[in-house]
Image (cartoon, rainbow, N blue to C red; front, side, top):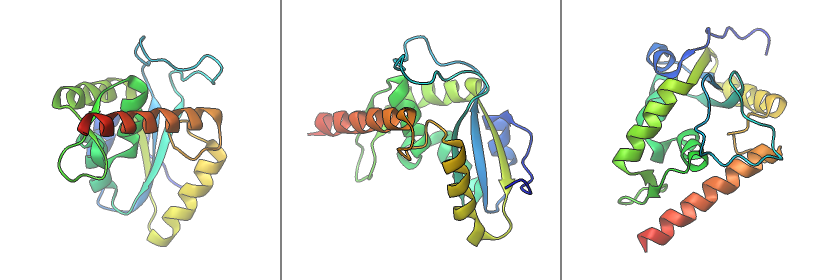
Length: 172
């Protein structure tokens, strides 16, 4: 893992626009703060400025970045953020996942631009991407990845599941 060449952490929007059409891994950091109204349980490790909060892999970094930039229905990361920020998801059409209202999509995007930094690395051999990302997630345990290894990850998973159930109830 030490041989990976990571970019300098940059504001999320800047990093996403710089991502190439190539396979790789990316890390998202909290560079600002959580809104005051976020109910992050006191017994969990607090999320603070500079913390790694999510990491992912992509067969194509540029295309994956687009999903995180604007499409909550196609981004587990955005759905996790929306859930802990208390934004309301809704079902639209035949999507497998709820998406936010247009106003909440804009609110989430603006918050991400102001409060997230991203770093990425290209992994030239696509077949190595999944294994590298799995090993890094197991070692680093980012709280917004829903791996279930830490109380923080379990909390985010539960919040996201509750938001999805609420969106499903509102649909029916």
